[in-house]
Image (tube, rainbow, N blue to C red; front, side, top):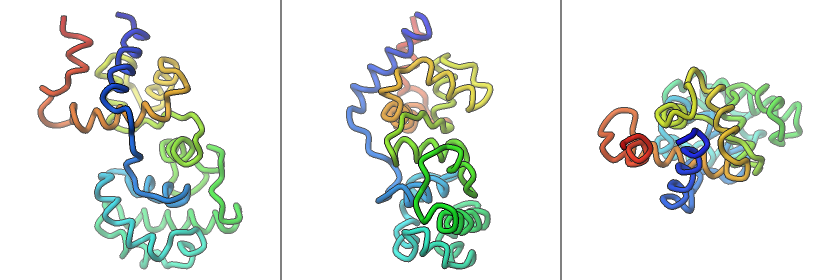
Length: 206
């Protein structure tokens, strides 16, 4: 089976398994999505969704976030790891959005990645889930599974993203990256029982 054939089989199986994929992070617009994704680094989406209601109750726009002190933001997100640096980033991000972008989340990778706390993965999520542009954000689940499925050499997430984009049609990127994340969580966790990982078995067990 070629790489391309494996990719097609994976896509077909994931479509059967997850015909609908909700966006895992609760948000109401591109700004609250970007905040939630920035908070999700090195923590779970579940934890982020527990913390953001209180944060968004007082700061669901760049203007409101910019008016809070770093300490106030930190207190609202203190249950999340790296809350010190994340609080500084959120304030800095909000201030730049207000001053430079008229409080509107920009729709280019270059402008998004200039914002504090917004790396390429966060920018990709905002572009795909916030604005509907084709993107393939690579998180740890995707990086690990793409390597496991021998669709990438897995040296780094940049290479994994490039390989994913070359193997899967652009029309499915936005949905497929979420399908792979859901599959990783449910069937092939990084630590724990891999017995449920039927896709890897299907591809490589002869």
